[in-house]
Image (cartoon, helix red, strand yellow):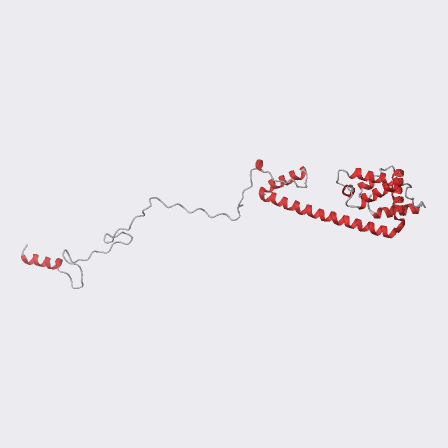
Length: 252
């Protein structure tokens, strides 16, 4: 190779161009990297320091799914307080209903307790209202009959016994029907006695009879009497006993 060619080649490849291109080893610029292919002229990206794939996010919760799954059938036991007013049949019915509909034990037990308490309070209010109404009705009857009230009440009791004997019915039927102590029933029986032209029976003579009749009246009208509650409560275990005692004291 002659000196001219050496000089020519050196000039073409070693001399930097005027536009600032790099010299010293060749003035021909490198072709651009192909699209999508990493370029050797750029630093490699840092790899993910955590090996493997990241954990997948948990699936979103289904809003329609129940939050508290009901317990197994064999573990479904409702909690009933000692004050629960229902019997064993009602307990079993509530338990079976809860199982059938998958109701949470804790929620259903709390609901039963609340409703039973409300119903008991309501029943007590109604009982007090009935007793107050009954006492007021007796006051009105005593005011209407005046001084004949005692004898006319006695006639009503005697008439009740007479009609029951004629019909072959036990006199306790008045208690079973819940009308044995109702002033309206006394007025009806008194009217029957007057219709049959039976005079009002006098109060049995003698101190003992008067005391017995006074005891019967206190049983019916005096809330402080030990037999008052049983006399007015047909669910009381002593109800029949107290009513029979009342009839004996009144001479029926």
